[in-house]
Image (cartoon, rainbow, N blue to C red; front, side):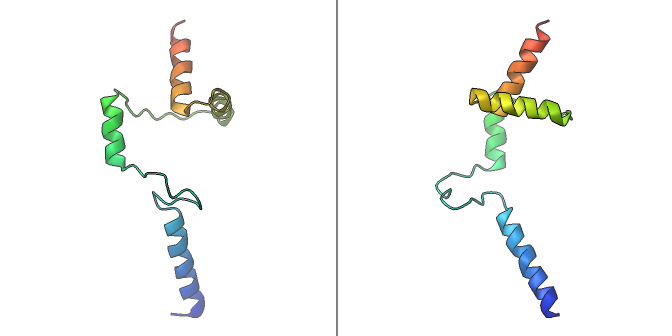
Length: 88
């Protein structure tokens, strides 16, 4: 293998480690990584169901701004907006 090929391979390994689940930035090592299976069980216990939709990017930005303004989770804000909208 050529030297450039080895460097490219090493870079891919490094990028994979950085994007790996549970990888944290400096100072964030204290955060507890929750397993996806455990998170799914917690969500099911709360009666939550995954619901994927495709939205316009402007609408998503509005939802994110509203969540940041309220200091709440994006899921909570979206649920609140949907509940208010369906009470018409």
